[in-house]
Image 1 (cartoon, rainbow, N blue to C red):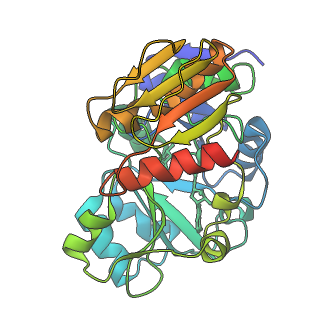
Image 2 (image 1 turned 135 degrees about the vertical axis):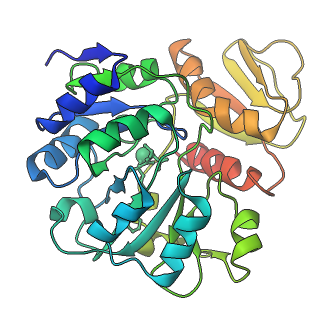
Length: 310
Ligand code: TXA
Ligand code: MG
């Protein structure tokens, strides 16, 4: 398949409206979009990514008000959407009938998100609800640039909408809103602190078993570059010409590549790109410096642990 590269959101929307697959920029990571109600297009999303069929997809909406069409919006879900949409938050709600079963993996719930990125919103206004998993081959780091998405999906999708690098760099915070209190299934840029400020009883799923049960995607190997990721204590560097460094501290000389981030926001933004650059340079190891698990540091450490486990 020949993949169309375009900078025109109308052209991207036209591809999607006729049942095509199109990579879209959001503020978190690039997504691989298809019409949410087109079962055949949804099936091809799983195929293009090599994604396990038991991992449900997020339905993206142009406006929070559209959530009513795909989900039963709980009181808590409505409050969360009013507080954080549009933005890097995904809310899990009881699903309404009508979506292809593959979207929800038969869970009875559906994840919805209203992206903030202008290009994504422009496309969504013209297409209606879109599924959009991260635009990587399953198991690879999420793409934060259109070129990274092309690296994984060129020839497997109909089009790529070429936008700017994403501003957040990590996937959205996934929050279960089927109950009375927000339950964080996947940490992201909407931090537990930010949730607690409005919903004091918010909590993160603690046990891994519970996380796997509620959010099947977290079971699968994730975010892993080909190089071996080592999570190292602050300042604990072992420079090598066969290794890359990423962290808040400048490393001693001797690394083949070094990404030094001025703050944890920059760490989040640059992490997946640093992984991909280490792979492009065929390095065998990535030393990733641990950060304090507060605020956005929780999400950074979550992705680093998963990558190190892969
Ligand atoms: O930032 C993001 O969320 C990006 C951009 C493109 O919007 N999308 C993304 O999609 O990261 P994906 O498919 O890579 O991750 C979706 C996550 C998975 O962990 C999945 O298991 C979880 O959301 N999820 C989807 N539907 C769910 C549901 N009904 N219940 C629980 N978890 C769900
Ligand atoms: Mg993903």
